[in-house]
Length: 477
Image (cartoon, rainbow, N blue to C red; front, side, top):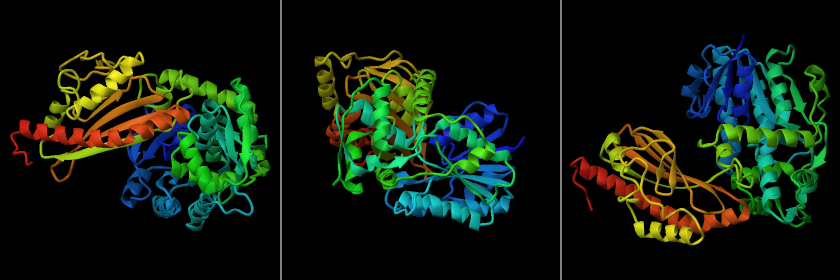
């Protein structure tokens, strides 16, 4: 059985492909820039295509590679990162003697003036030019939990009573079910005579984005009128999505650039090579929502988007974040000892008055925020309560994750990370993650953002000072 490396295992497709390959009996190696949630028995290898030193060790003993890496979230220069990453990886794969790379690209319209789609095409060309046996699988909109285009659609349908939409909602594309795409990806591992070829993966329906939105609304029993506005440019459309969905603005901007095209696709050669029943859009939608419920139930109480929004389909998959951090002269153990005082009488180390105001606001609308105290005053235990927070995750001495239980239009968590630096200093970082409930959830986040940035920076500095005092290190004012 072949050894398969999934590059981008922490991403959307990778998170589904890894267990799918494992279930078919392949030995699976997950490659990513940082450790990620993996099924038992899957090996993790640190692999960053922009850090060539990590690639040869990750490719040791690998027969087949699935290359699923993209950089849409990096902003305007994402295409440069994608292409340099491909150059680095192709050189390493050639040196390691990899048998085949399966590259997931994007269906191409003609002509195409989308930076996102052009970068995907060029990356496929770079792999082939590098002399590495490569087969490119091009897909359009993927119907499945976590797909950026699908999550845009989902947020709009669940949270807006009326949609004022850009002209690109009339562009047509053949959306494909996640299960159909996984079948094609895995089938290319053993397929013969495919190296150097490009295949289109498409569903059976050619639908406009507006038709998909209408079908989605009908599926959940909702009436959602759509009014296209022709003068909204792609740039304005991306900003509109920023305030109407949870999808990050750089990703939305890249997506809009592709969605404005009609993207028909000839998938005949791929269907002949790897035949399977193709799900219609309605069937793919049913499959996706059922999968979301199944995974959400399995991941309930975990720090995953599906686990957090289980039973709350209106919450966004993508999170908004705000953070603060400080460097500390004390050791990680001492910083952890100070952090263990969080909540209860110690409260939150900084500007406790603002925390009290927020708690009273929650109390006045029937929330639990005035519930104070800790289940276990001495240590953090997963599942315990810390004031009105619930402890979601603990890595002793390194990380604490709290679930926000106050009433608000969305779901949030607060993550503390304590990291040793090569310099000998300790880095403490506090990050708030917020999964908004539509436009109201995004408005709430924007209203709270200035306070978050102010409070979290002060909190980390206060914890660092207390840790240094506890360690007997002179504190400088």
